Length: 282
Image (cartoon, rainbow, N blue to C red; front, side, top):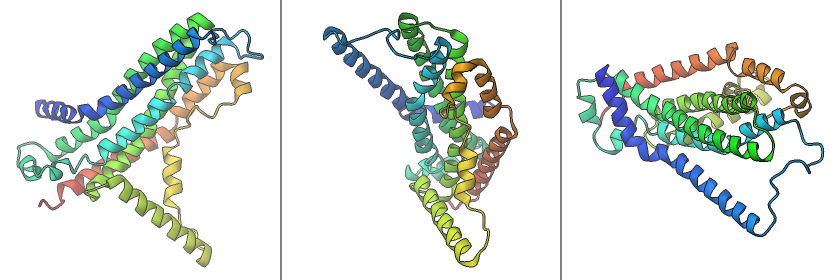
C-alpha cells in the first residue's frame, strides 16, 4: 500500500502543473469580472438589485440555477484536462524514454496503471470541487447582498452540477485512458476518429443493406449523458424547486445507469491495464 501511495504522490507531482491550470483560468475569469464590475461601478452603470426585473423567479430558484450555471465553464475545463491527462497516461514514460526503467521496478503494473488513472480523473475531480466550493462562497456573498441566500437549494445546485460533470468525466476519462493503451500519440483524437469512421461505415451499411448494426457513437453518447441539470423546465422549477432537486438526484445518482457507467469505466480500466501490461516495450 505504501508503494501505491508513493506512486500516486509521484504521478500527482508530475501532473501538478496541468491540474493547476483550471484554477488559474478560474482566477483569471474572476479578475476579469472584478475589472468589469469596477468599470461599471465607477461609471454608474452597476445595478445590484433584482427588484427591477419583471417576473423574477423566487429566491430558491435563483439560488439553485445560479449555482448550476456558474459551474458550466469550470466543468467544461475539467473535462478537457481529464482528456489531456488520461490520453497520455500510459505513454508518458515512452516519450521520456524511461518505460523500461519503470517496468523493471518491483511495483505491480496494476498499481502503476491505477495511479495514473486516479490522478488523471480524480485529480481533476478534486480541482473541480475546490473551484465549486470557491464559487459557492462567492455566489453566497453576492446573493446575500442583492437578493437572499438559501443554503440548502444553493448547495444542491452546486452539488448536482459537480456530480454531473464528475460522471461525464469518469466515462470520457476511462475511454481516453483506454485509447492511451492502444495509441502512443494523440490517443483521444485517434480513438475518436476510429469511432466516427465505424459510425459512418455502419450507417452506410444499414442504409444499403437494410441491416440494423448498432451505432457505437450513439451508445457512447447515451452512456456519457449524465442527466445534466442544464435542461431545466423553468416553470416546474419555479413552482417546486425542492421536488425538482429530489427528482434530479434520482436521475443523477440513484439509478441503474449510474451502476452501468461505473461498471463500464471499470471494464475499460481493466482492459487498458491488460493491453498496457502486454504491450511491446521499445
